[in-house]
Image (tube, rainbow, N blue to C red; front, side):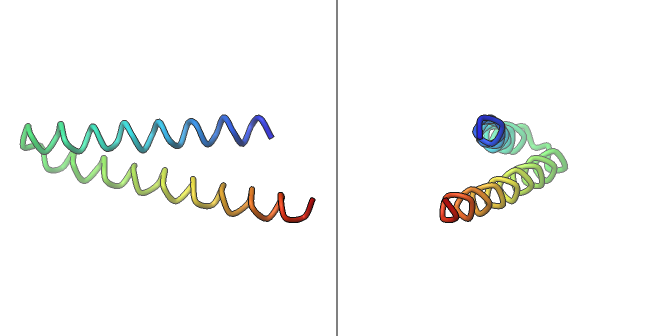
Length: 62
């Protein structure tokens, strides 16, 4: 359970840092970096949603 909570915290940090990176890169007109940060934010969001689905199903079983 603690591993999943730590993963959730890591995913949240990844999403937040990717969001800041998008704004930084856009302000500095580095559009390729913007695309990279959007892709990483999407990856972290996808992983977080999968983790939440898994946690819900585990909690319903108990």
